[in-house]
Length: 292
Image (cartoon, rainbow, N blue to C red; front, side, top):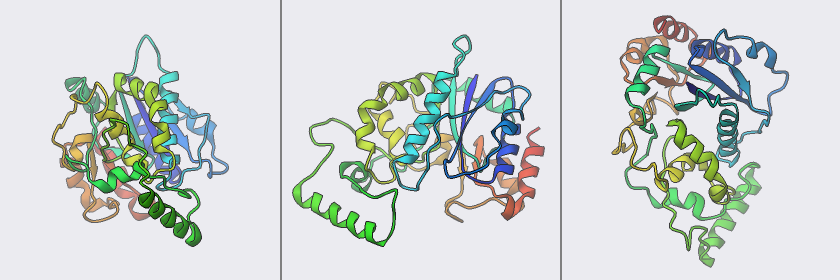
């Protein structure tokens, strides 16, 4: 069994297509809908599937880019999946994707791939050696991340400079190693449970941080007993490490179009991001038709 966890805040027609593509007796689907969304039809989505359970998080968080709310959402999904796990058929893998991602391989291919690589953790690292700026994301307190305007930006920078002058270091006296990478992952059930169980000892470092969703899982991982279980030990910014095809060269990231169909077919990755019905809905149907 696999747990597929989805963070969604828009493009709900695409989300419907995504859930239907994942509908499989071997998958359960867990979804977080941003608290800012109004009039979402939960019952419709819960009744979409024939085989998979679709379970929404009870706690809905208003997510802000660069804010701790992103990590809080990921933990909420992990906890929801763990709580709803069938103990007789535990999840071997937990996948985190967004509502504008798609699986570019069939469910059969995806399960076979992870069976063949059972025990490996699919986590991306921006570089093999973390840089100081990444460490500073949690070394110092970063305030007002959820309320960004000209005044709070000025205040945040002033407070950051003051901390550096005063020698503030939230990591001082700890042996915590920091790492950074893509926030989308596929991790084993054992590591997912470890993250949920150990998060309390890390939470204070991720609160009042900067873009901590990119250091959250990587940091817990490199300080865990699982640190030698990487699928790609020398990742060095290769997104194949997390089996996500993401094009950062043409966009931020690039939105795939129908001309990218052969490129998407040829990727070894199992998920791709991102897609947009308004930009090009045809590529979405092309991918979903091809993987059947």
